[in-house]
Structure formats: structure tokens, C-alpha cells
Length: 415
Image (cartoon, rainbow, N blue to C red; front, side, top):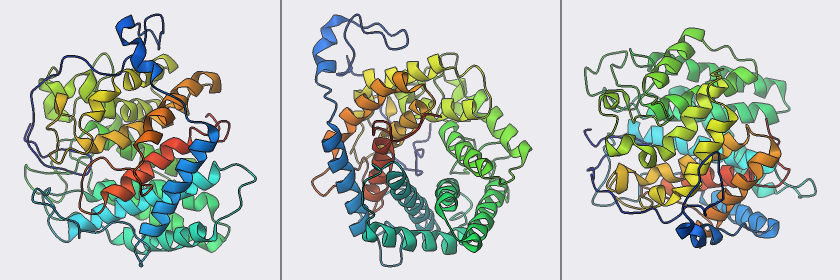
């Protein structure tokens, strides 16, 4: 592993250490999809207190207001201004175009989802509507211009993927037919760009250290490919055509990186080293949720409810493995080579996995997710997990809001 890996292409050194015991596991007699665990950990699960509906709403409102007040004047979120001695590989200006596009898309999607899942008696907030309009207009203008930074840095694939997710939500709420048509056109440009930046092996990653050719020879990453597949699935749900061979190659890429227990290796070359720490269960907690969901959404019958609940249970039980990496400035330096920027990302896709389950099965997992995330909110209303210039608070807050919006009892329908 060369160290230059991560959710937004973060670079850093690896660690091969392994701690003795995770701090958060469930009590004996409590079975989560077949996981029966020692009673010595009973006190740990007891510390997870589900927030009251009032506390959850207050937390969501503080996060929403953080996004509204932190938006740039041009409608985007995030900047390159907050730097530190250790910075990731980010060739200018293209890398920052990608970071800002992905961050802005997540913020727009989060604000829309929070509105959609809000209690029916909640009054509309004009400031939120104004922020949404500015953010949507920014995406419509800038996403078609997004390209890779150079022959190595393909961070733009995150902007295309999350851009599609946000655009789909924009289309669903748009009332003007002309605006819906414009949104659809931009979605189609993003799909075309993902086709252009697809790996020759199928799927996507965000670095090409091999050749730097017109079509990247990058090694596809399991979680990047899963993220983009889910965005393409969203586009299909509103009637946008997606090339079937593009999907088929991506699904094969994920399956090549899938282990028998539904851990997923970080990227394709690491399938030859399946017991590398990052490829084991604690190292896969932030990846298995998105990969399982992507395969299920494209018809894989082996991703059953039991598989989803098993991995939701593992995320709750072993949550500290992700938590150890949260806010560490060096990617992959934590136990099992976990990087901080997988924290809120992993919980977001866990909440989306819960959406696939019957309501009574999903409820305890949603309660645990809210019990984990609400106490981590910062004093200014944000959430963040890795210092990434000035993008980390907006994207962390967006992920947390989209997770917690799904924890509102009865507000987000189970699919």
C-alpha cells in the first residue's frame, strides 16, 4: 500500500499496530444478526443513550444552521484557505475544484433530505431555501466543468458521484419543468464524465499512478466504486439512462474485492493481501456498508437482510475502531490503518442500509446511530472527522445530517 489512499484521496503513512480490545461491544445474550458477545462489555453498550426526539431535532437544527452560515457567497461550500503543515496531495486548481464540488453536492443533498424528513408541522425556513437555491445554481453551473486535476489526481470522480446524488434530489423537488430539464442534462454530463474516467478494469478510483492515459489505468477502489454505483442507481430511479455495461463492469470490480465475510479490500491490488490490517473487519467498517448496499441495489441476492444487519451490528459493536482514527491528521495512521475521513462516511451508508430493512428491524440500529453521532457534534453545530483544508466541517456535517435525518422516527420511509 503506497499510503496515498482515502475517501477524498488523502495521503499519509500507514500503521501496522493493533490494539487489544475495542471499547464498544454488546452484552452477552444480545444478538445482533448472530453476533453474541462477552458480558464483560455490558457496561459499554449501556452508555449508548438514544437521544430524545427533541434532542435529535435540536441537533439537526444546529447542523442545518451551521451549513447555512458557512456557505460561500457564490453558493458553494468549502475553501482551500485553511492549511496545515501536513497537507494531502492536491494539485491546484483541479483538486480543489473536485473537493468543493463534492462538498457542495453533499451539503445541498443534506439540506434537501433534512427538509424532506422534517415533521409535517415544521415551518419552512427562508434562509435554508435561499441557501439551497444558491447551492443548486452553483452545482448546475460548475459540475459540467469539473475534470481531473492532472494525470494522477482523479478526485473529480467524487464530485461527479455526489453531484448526481444531489441533482437527483434537486430534480425531485423542482416544480419548474424547465429547471428539471436542466438538471437532467447536467446529470447526463456527469454520467458521461464518469464513463470517461472509468478505470480500464471497470469501476473507479481517484489516483492513476500507472500511466496517466486518457482512460485511467487506475486500480479501482471498492468503496469509490460503490459510492458511484449508488449515485447511478439514483439517476436511474428518475428515468435517466445509464449504460448497462458501465454498471456491469463496476459490479464485477466490487465483487473481485469482496471477501467471503463481506469485508471488502481497499482497492484491487490488495486482494492479494487479504489479511493486511486495512482489509480485515475493523478496517472495512467504513467500506462494507456502501459496498453491500451497492451490490444489493443492483440485484445481488446474496446481500440479504441478515448481511446488512450483521454489518450494522459490527459497526455498532466495533465503532471505536473507526473512532480511533477520527480527527487524526495523518491518514491511515490509526489502528487497522483506518483514516479519519471514513467516520461519517461509514455511518451515512450504514443509515442507508437501515433504510433497506423493515421498520421494526431498522429501529434499534437507527437509535444506536443517533446515540453515537449526536454527542460528537461540535459547539458550532458542525461535525468533522479529518482536517481537510476548509472542506471537512461542511462535508462532515452533511454526512452527519443525512445519517441523523434517517433516525427521525417514522419520517424516513423504509424502502
